[in-house]
Amino acid sequence: MPQAHEITELLQAWSRGDSDALAKLIPLVDRELKKIARAYIRKERPGHILQTTALVDEALIKLIREEKMDWDNRKHFYALIARRMRQVLVDYARRQITRSGTRVVHVGISEAQELTNKASEELLDLHRALTKLANKDERKAKIVEQRYFGGFTFGEIAKMLGVSKSTVEREWNLARAWLSREIKDGDTLRTGGT
Image 1 (spheres, rainbow, N blue to C red):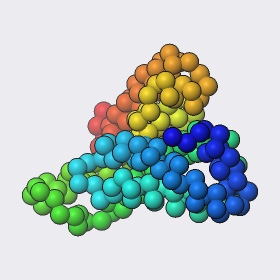
Image 2 (cartoon, rainbow, N blue to C red):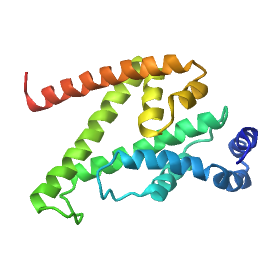
Image 3 (cartoon, helix red, strand yellow):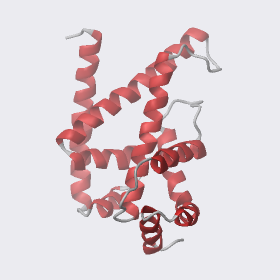
């Protein structure tokens, strides 16, 4: 298992423009990136087009294409890559909604389209609500991303954020309740209900 400082040193070298550092970094973080990706994929509908490795690859491509990043530490890297994975899935969901179902599924055609669109809409609803939460309380949004999408334990999140485990648990519960209300209100507004 790689040492935390080794990953941090490679991240900092990469941010200084050392392309060899990236090549050395990827094998060291691959296992953790796949763990995060698996947590995301578990939340998706069965038969999702993206698999774990593809999600990792697309998120890394997004990250590499961005401007140089000054990495604080490996936790900063994992948090940002988890956010990029979410963006990849949201992008796929948006495309799915605008496309007329072209995937082969083991249900009737009308049911397949309905399930695909519903799952895509639910992911977009969650993305919108989580973005709104981040504007109100960034730490709660990070906790949701790391717990729900990243699959991290409360203890791991507490270490990443530098707070107590009980703080993470309390904020997780508050964030879940807030997101639930926000998504429900969004559903009501979108369908014209009361």
